[in-house]
Image (cartoon, rainbow over all chains, first blue to last red; front, side, top):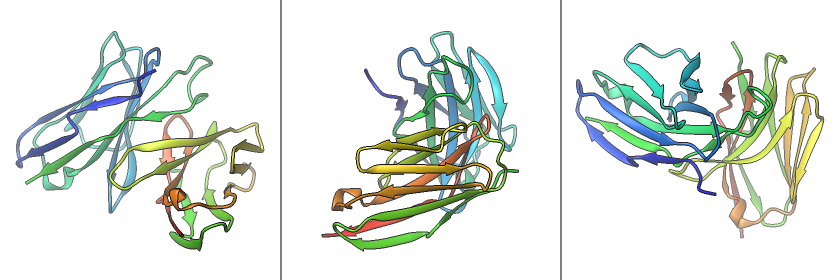
Length: 116
Length: 109
């Protein structure tokens, strides 16, 4: 079974631009979560989608948004990029057959975003 | 707000030694706790998941314990190998994962 895939793997953007990252969960998984990882702040939760609905949201500005499609694939968008948005963005999926927070979260390889 | 702390921040041991990694969290209202491994520049690999009702989980050379009431978990890695060198992260799930900063392990051959 294929793992979580994320595209693109690397991105370089300039301040003020916007960017869209994509995540394809493991087949059959309905929950997709996004995390930002930086050397200074570590791993921080951005948001979680389940059945095309945002179920939880972290403490990030409105410039960070996301969505989930009917096939469970998810995208996140960052508008008006800032230097501080440079990070590894990780996506995770889980099955949640028995309800939220009951199953292992499987992470993708991440998208490395550099903002110049 | 959930705070997760991992001690020590770094650990260097000779091959064959057992590893003990500690994780503590401030809010015991969690659904589960997961241990992950991260290699440099890579994503996270799930090692063990402990449900809140469980006390421990084992997988091969790995054993993790959970004491929810005291807000602690410990990951034991038996007979360490150079391939175990990585950063180990603990995360508690209360509808989202809250991560510790990790313990970077180096196993010397």
